[in-house]
Length: 239
Image 1: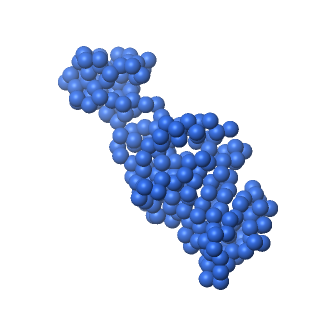
Image 2: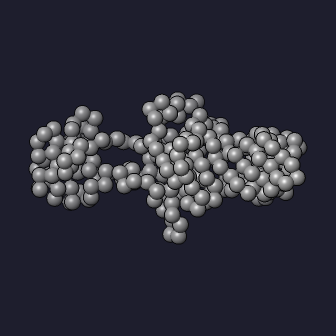
Image 3: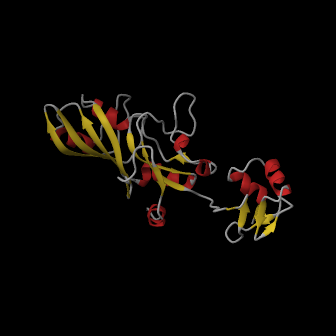
């Protein structure tokens, strides 16, 4: 059981004082009865709560899949740039969600967004070995020796030794290469820095999967959807 004013405040209906004012106007109804006391306890699982004629679909957690566009930062707030949270509808912003890990500003593709801190920790912790797969276009010819270097673990410019990764060469010639990269970490600019260590540059980068969740090709860049129950259960059951 939770206080009604807290529930409504968490859903973006204003401060507790503003929720109290809604109740005075009889704009809040619980189980068919107008509420006079905004501090009353409600069962968010079973009580039917209406605000201004709309029935609430109350949930503790939200789980979203976004096809992140270029030029948007993976953060909850930024003084200069648009964030992935800015792209969400107000009904989702009310849950105070955050991106799971991050994609660079110019990197596109799959980004998970949630307010479930426990799941976030499970997915981004390197010790849990959750694969992140990227499609990348490189400015030079990528070789089998480069793939072996990924398998050994690339040393970045600051001396950090990356965990072993996988480099799958899709197409390569003197004009450039198309590859898929699988890593289990999320260091700052990691994929780009790994190739820079091999004297090559990433010219395009798109994340295509995060663990068992794959990019939804029906989503245009900047669009998002809620994860299905099946997808949520798969993430929850990751070892």
